[in-house]
Length: 251
Ligand code: 13P
Image (tube, rainbow, N blue to C red; front, side, top):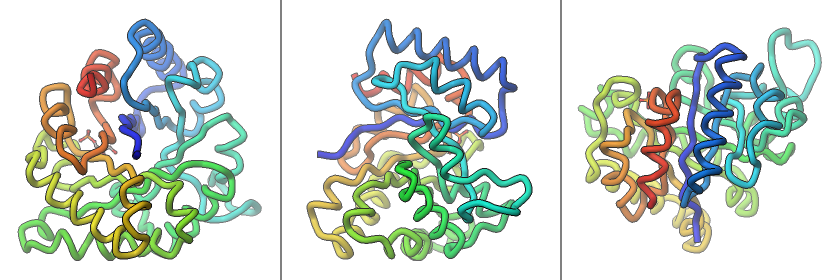
């Protein structure tokens, strides 16, 4: 059966010292009170090599927030999937709406990133989700279906290694959360697309996380949906009490 996962996306927050302190505090809290789900923290690149040795790998996985679409070479400022993996990180967020919107990441670029992540044994947390105008025009299904094209080119074996995150852009950092019903409806639709492409077994085993203003007060209701297998958490991942409150929704 698929895993329940709560993953934090620190985005561009916390300097190195603050990030190390946050990871240590989270590790202490989850060592003392073990989670009932997989927990992942995705940090800025520069934190990875410092954070991976200080967390208990059996409790907290570490991931990057992006990686390059090229293997190596003259790409000033880029960080490759191989470099990410060499820090001990095991995950990488790909296709986040902020990367799509501000850094113009297309489906073709994302397809390359996903392949390189998998080639380096990283688990991609692949994000999809519509903007407000698309939701208002009732186009959310079309949008997520077209975004999935970057991962639907994978073999069934490779697709089985990825995690999906549905993040409606209108709910990210806005305090507006999708209702539990809205989340379930589109997660079920996403799973139905996986059934069509890869069959029931692969679809049943794919974790689909919800992201967008997820907090301790709404996590339980969201995660109680049969097709919502956890969350990708932004703002609330920056405070241990809030992040742990969300993790504890699985207790
Ligand atoms: P917030 O939880 O801050 O809305 O961010 C969600 C997100 O973008 C996680 O990737």
